[in-house]
Length: 96
Image (cartoon, rainbow, N blue to C red; front, top):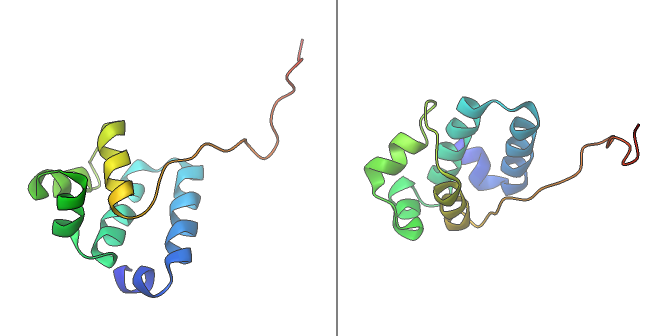
């Protein structure tokens, strides 16, 4: 997957957004680890995110549960950021 993501960064974004829609955290951590490998390796991402490489490996494991600050730093090191989007069919603002 890392090679696919390296060759097609848009694919990586599509996969990540699909996972976020489903809410599978273990799968998200696995894909983020593959993306880290695609953008220069976990060591390079750890340096840019100011994290210990061992900590980053653990964070990006299927059982990883990063703090928001760590996740934001990891994404920033990979040239990404978190964003909030409305659901496809938002509930009525004036529901009784």
